[in-house]
Amino acid sequence: TFDMPSFDYVYPHSGYYHVTLKVTDANGCTDEQGKTVSIHEPETQVFFANTFTPNGDGLNDIFKPEGQHIMPEGYSLVIYDRWGVKVFSSTDPNYGWDGTYMGRLVPNNSVMSYTFRCITEYGMIRQKGAVTVVY
Image (cartoon, rainbow, N blue to C red):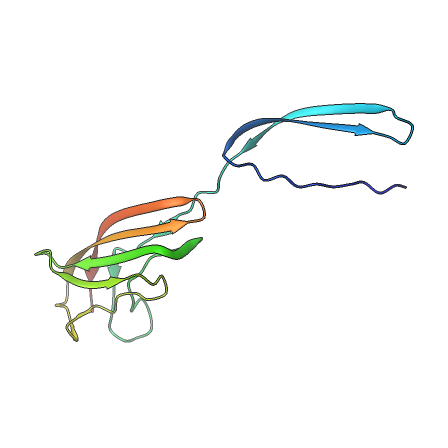
């Protein structure tokens, strides 16, 4: 039995890399083995509901993105009404929209638009969409 040394390497970009492992034993004998490896960055997916129900039942009461690897730096969620009036904005990934504007719920079945931007550990995401408020 012998101790096998180990090592880690972080590739700077996705792509294909040829990796060669060369070993030398205590007697000076060497051997090497090569292999091509494929490195892919994980895809960060961000999901938005197309409808939400701010009716106070504790289910789907807040509109905000769901996903992984979302960082607070560079985060922006802005909600607009159908006339382009900004009704909500947040730069905090943990703070979503409760369906109100100026302290009152927007009308039932309102279709609102949103713009979203965030930085993840894998890059920038920008998204636009619409959400219907139902209660």
